[in-house]
Image (cartoon, helix red, strand yellow):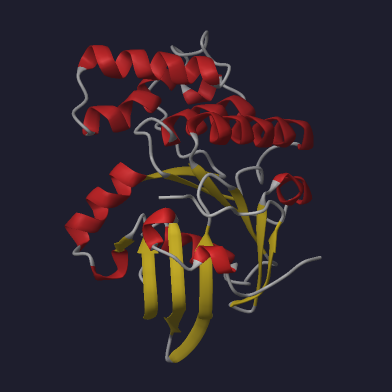
Length: 251
């Protein structure tokens, strides 16, 4: 297995080419009176338009790493660039706006609003963005069709299967055309067949929309589908497996 804790030489150019660039990242949590290091010395480049999986055992730091990339948490040390922006120095209100505009999220427990229909759940971030009614309704209809739920838009989450709810979550994550979609254990609450279908769907949507997907997962099927795998253990990256060659874009 080819491995390296450093990005390939072609990745060391402008961070604007890459959805995520991390240099010397550290994160420590305070538990009672004890400091508990969650991440230490993280150097990582996420390449654009790739299916990247962060893999490691429970407690390895993969969810902490995903939360930093998702601008939900901030590092204690190091430099974190997301979409070419130094997000660790952004004010909270600016960071919140950046997260809403540039990032999409898919959660293992779906995080759909139960009082809204599938259509309304996908539409909701577009309403917050102020998109005109006609434009947003056309976009939602196209997204629901793309995830195979064109005939389920009027159903509420409680009327949908787990796989269908995750399809709604994928459509919602892509609603605002983010440059990066983050998924924390997206198949954990699904059976094996449904999980495989969701992986195939997300791979299709990633290629169709030319967006980077980053997963935290220890599901072998998710890891098998990845273009790049980041292995993490005890808060440190132990290997990076890049399964596709990276060609530096020309100016």
